[in-house]
Length: 117
Length: 114
Figure 1 (cartoon, each protein chain N blue to C red):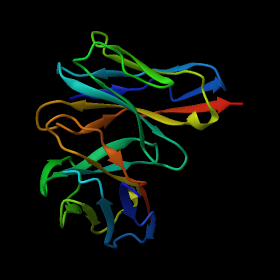
Figure 2 (cartoon, each protein chain N blue to C red):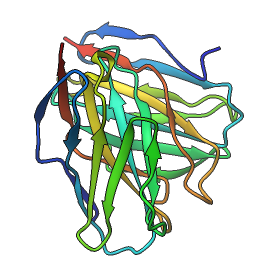
Figure 3 (cartoon, one colour):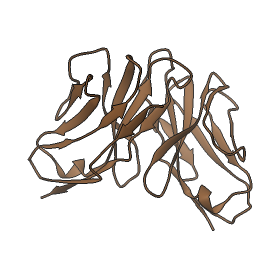
Figure 4 (cartoon, rainbow over the protein chains, first blue to last red):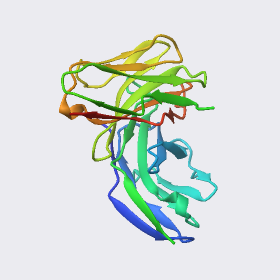
C-alpha cells in the first residue's frame, strides 16, 4: 500500500525567508502524481502545486517549487520569500495513475507552517 | 461563484441520529469525492463517484452512504451517528480519472457528535 510521510509536524520561518517542507512516499508504481495542498485556518483545501512522476523537471508555481527525487521517493516543497499568508497546514499527497485506487488522494499527516513577521 | 459548496458548514447532533451533508459542484466535473479529516488533521478518502457510479469505497462503516442524484451532487448520509464520527468532512471534485485531474475541495463540514 502506498504511504506518505511528512516528518516535520511543525515548521517556522521568518517573513521573506525561504523554507523547505519535507515529504517522502512509498509506492511500487512508476507512474503517479504528487501534490502539495495548503489548508489555512479557514479549513479550505487549496492546491499549491502538482508533479507528474514521469516528468523529470521540477514543478514551480511562482514562489513555490518542488524538489522531486523519484529514486529517493522524496518530494519537498520550497517556499521562497515567505509571506504571512503562507501560514497554514501543508499536506503532501500521492495519487496512483492506474488501478482501482486511481484518483484516490493519499495524504501525509501535514506540516504546520508558522510565518513570523 | 463557489466551485464546490457544502451544506451545512457546522453540524452538531446527538449520538444515534441520522444526518446528511450535501455537496454541489458547478465545475462540470465528472468525479466527486468525500474525505474525512480527523481531530489530528489526518485526511482520508471515503468515497468517490464517477458518472454516478461508486468507484472507490474505502473501508468505511456501512452507516455511511453516498448518494448522487446527478453529476453535480454527491451527498453523504450517515446513520446511527457515533462519537467517533466527529470530524471535518470534505467534498471534492475533479474533471475525471483518465488522467489524474486536480481535485477541488469544498470548504468542509465540521460534524460534532455529542
